[in-house]
Image (cartoon, rainbow, N blue to C red):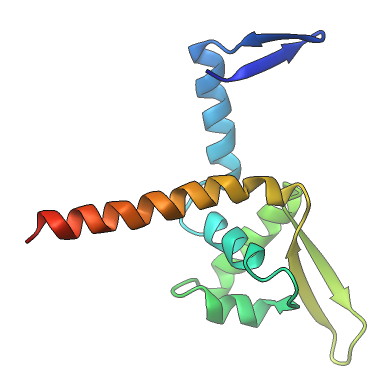
Length: 125
């Protein structure tokens, strides 16, 4: 069970509190693209990642959707948007230290997805 700290005292969260926390997490991270964007950026910490590179690197995402998701990730303090002093002006994106806290979630999903794909393939023949 999850833990909650209230007034310096740790206790187990009840089911309702856990479901609220799950909903909050899904509100911030849910959808088809946010976790993929975070994983893409996390896997390239030493690279300058600009919009077009993200758009090319994440297959199937439209420019409009990428722009929307980047704004939401920035609003939730998971990524930074940095305007570079170049001509023409370029913008780069990176995962924040807080955004790195999502890495264990994406790592678990990646590992589960690999195992699930293998299980489905095995069940088909």
